[in-house]
Image 1 (cartoon, rainbow, N blue to C red):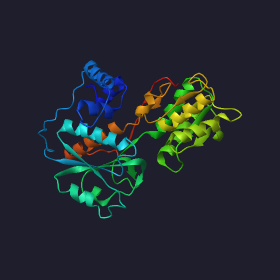
Image 2: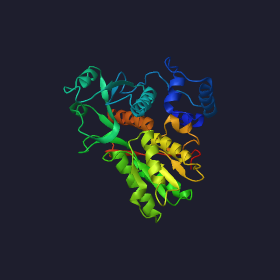
Image 3: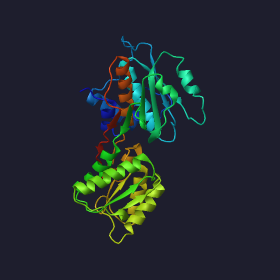
Length: 332
């Protein structure tokens, strides 16, 4: 198989977005020479080449895919999904444009009207939070794929992170490391990601004959401060955990700081695993074992699906779940 940008990122120890910005020579991106060298060395070692940017001679010539999201700047996820879509589109000779749509700010869906002024191949619609949506009407006028969200009536195909399997994999990794009392600092209740990651946590416990202890589950707000405070709460238990699974890397950062404050070694006394594989995970000390949130790959998959639909292929899958692989570092 040809090496991918994700392979380069893994070899260099950086994010896919960093690899893309360096290889594409973005004028606004500032990176140290050491980072640039790691990326170029990884490219040379793997034999990676950027996709051919010349237009492909197929039915999608001169066509545009509109990538619409509800948020771009508060978290990196939709930017990564767009980058994955853009790279795959270059490979296929398709153009991807980017727009922001918030229903309350654009009740008449004018953003979609602008998109339809181009020879449109289809829409990719993504949300910063994994959630159920009522799709905008324009998505039913052209081939459309939902990313990180889903239509409750399954009228449109969607691509979602496999959070149940991810929660199970994270917990089982800690069990395999010999841990017997595993705490879980989850995100806010009522959201899809925390619900599914908790389900995976419970599945791993049950399949390994561990009893579920609700005292070991705490709820944070995705920020380091809640990881810090909830870790102290877990360690204050009469029987504290010997491992903590944090539902995102930012809470894991706070968790690590709290454990250090209490004089605990990581992973000697308490193992820690995160979720997301943010850039910061590799700079936590010790570097954080985490799960990769595959938004880049999901963006590429969405472009492939729209391209296939335009070519007359139909998928029998109305909802695809993408694996969140474990990135091994030194905190477990």
